[in-house]
Image (cartoon, rainbow, N blue to C red; front, top):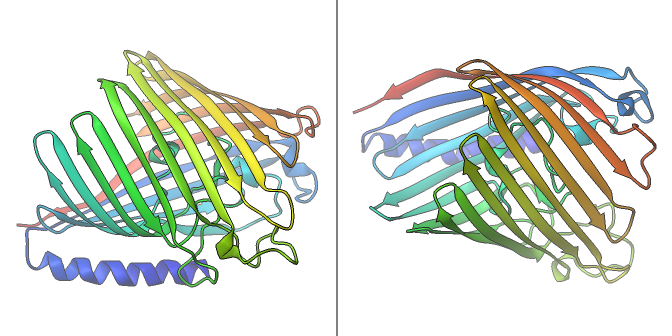
Length: 362
């Protein structure tokens, strides 16, 4: 079903771009981030996987971009990865290769001296939060992602949502507003049932160069009739909204880069108590030498329906070349329902960025 949805979106977006390319100066560019490595965790050897405690993993993200002149662009991000790859999948009995569409959009942009505006339409990443800007392995200094992000049953999906978005900047201010076909808490394909309009947005202010603070929020129906927690006797999904609010900060100075987010999610129910969750993380990277860095992320989640947990992730990174990065990463997961080192993960990851195709028209 998801593969058909990806094809459907590309068939909508690409022909429109080709038609416009004949009317204005154009260019095509293809970027690729490819990652491979190994994972070791007790989760891999216990139920439901019951396999070896070690596994290989790979991931590739393709970034085709078609420039249609001074203002119009068609772009996409297509992800393929082995299962398991992400840490949250290590306890699931999933195998094979997953292909997903991270974005496929037509955008119109205008830039002036101290302001800009961009209008996007298509399959979009959520406008909520800030980590999705660093979702690429070549940008993320660690291997895992913050606890609130993931594909499904998380506060913020890493997958795309069909919709439209307006981004604007004025001086030190930036804003974004987005309307999508489903919630960041439960992404729905254009071919799925139970699609409901959702809003997400955010704003930020750059206090000085390298220091930005921001806020974001989303709201809209999130349940579908096949949702694991949609119980008999529950109200119609379109009467039960999910609400997310968050703050974020980014700071860079010298050899340091620091990121942090705090988020609160509320999923409304009538047949059972409303679910709430607070989560947050702090992340820092320190460049030791031009080729070496160390990084750490400390995060927590506090849900209302079950015991919370916290994670401590540490990584050493080595830049073997201008396009190659090697990471050695270890994550410790602790909580009332976690037995010792059962959910700890050791990962080694090699990342390379490629630029196999670039063409500039007239």
